Image 1 (cartoon, rainbow, N blue to C red):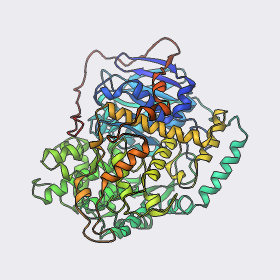
Image 2 (image 1 turned 90 degrees about the vertical axis):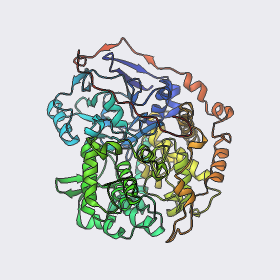
Image 3 (image 1 turned 90 degrees about the horizontal axis):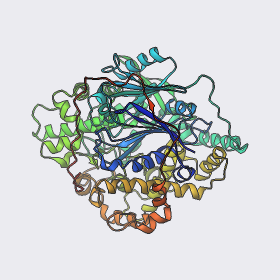
Image 4 (image 1 turned 180 degrees about the vertical axis):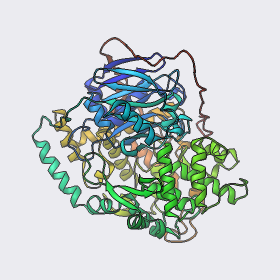
Length: 628
């Protein structure tokens, strides 16, 4: 059964609980488990920055095993940036520490009386004052916690999260970030600087009840090392290898999506990064791919930048200075900011300046403005205080909501849907907003994985997109890195899961679980007030054709793709799952299952303070068709 720890910061209490085995079979773990817990808590009825909004830290059944790239954890809540259900998935050792503590999840509600952090060991749970930690940047805060608690695994926020920047991130070991959606702001609203796990000493047991586990591990290792994607391109160049690929296709968004090719792409490419700035290759715990990079900066060695960060501070802002991009990425890692939303919001400000709407604002190509605006955003000073609300609210403030390149309030990443129409449908239907991690059509529309599709076609893409969305729900719940899906199949996942669970799980059951998880997230958003009108894209992508290059003349014809997608999902014309679809997936009985307490409530020591309650910032509602 799933075993969890429920923390109420307001009551300064903790209680251990477990979930029925039916829940484990229905949602696997990780992301699916977090979805179930958020729906159980009716989080769709809470304001994202209100004390009642739950934060869920969860792992899947493969965490702590020798499965490739399984050292990951999920953090989930209702997003203050989008108001949708939202989860992030991160590598590092935090998930392994949860496993060593015999916990599948920790769910946190309430709010501390003063800045605090949660300490969890095998025999002790405490809420401790964050004196000397609050206000520190992420590397310094992590180092201080190690001084205090030795070999610990913290998930913590930086100054941006403390000030409730709506796209603040949460960091774990080696600058691994739960970056998107502002879950760091949710922690900040609770005056929670960190969750610190102190697992017992000794090696983590990774054996399983099935001797066939070693066989599937050998098979997957051979496939991952032999693939040109996971065995060559990603190990050699990391994710920045994509910059040239997308630029040559005419699908690299440039200057706030006004163009689709960047004339200086060569100067900020993965090849340029590797030639002049990379110190060494790095990998997440237990990952055979090793797509990460440590690069040089003025402050020393830093992590990244990844492809999305290169794009966000480079092509999207019209900046061709690779050193400035590295420094901007490092600043976000220190302050705890999502690089995609930060870069996209700066690009939005640059276009407002170009249109003479924003006076004395940043200009496209201004590399110096990057660091200035990142620092101002993290500290909520001047223009940075406006940017801290994300591009949708920022652009609306200046009367130009159409210049925010977002879907459901989440800024779009580095793929121009006018050059990849299926990616446009993926952005529009994503349950967490404009996101390439829910489903990336790069495989089928560019690389030919699992099949090659015409990247400009409107019809016939829904089935492939749904397959990717459901597969990624499975991967996030097991958990496994999404890059593994370039070569592994549901059969491999099912064999690994069967070994861990000591019962047979077939591929069809896994696919059904992925579909169930996707529908649970849709149910959450519908209950939160979202409608079909929110499954859309920026007007620019729907109405303004690309003016030059390989994708010239194209826009996204979304309506017929959306109709086809809903039909294939078993939803009605308004995007609501039919009763038959939900019944077939077993959603109603699943949501009737409730956690079972395993003992009395535990009073946490050291957390309550009689005074010093800080000001609570309430997130503005998004102005959208769902009225949220």
